[in-house]
Length: 91
Image (cartoon, rainbow, N blue to C red; front, side, top):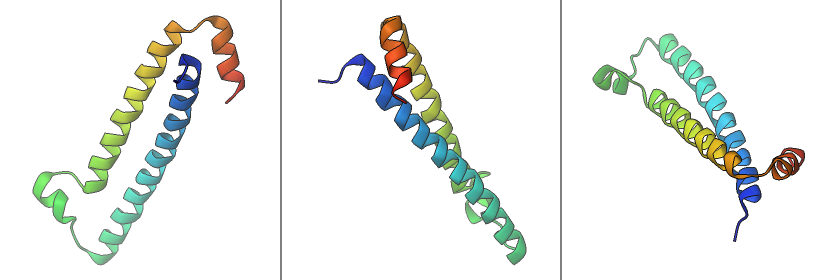
């Protein structure tokens, strides 16, 4: 069974991965927009829905990060100061 301290560490690691994913998606969006502009082609999904697939992935990842942040904040309220110091030292 996972302890609250271990759960906080796991949440932090997952959030770091989500941040990396978000940066990669934003980079990919820029590259995609550049290529479409070079080819003088519109994004088909954006033409229909007003948003690109990458826009949707970025929004979903941002929501996931917000959820992870809320979960970590809730968990931090349950941990003692010693547990929080220990968890911060293990990052």
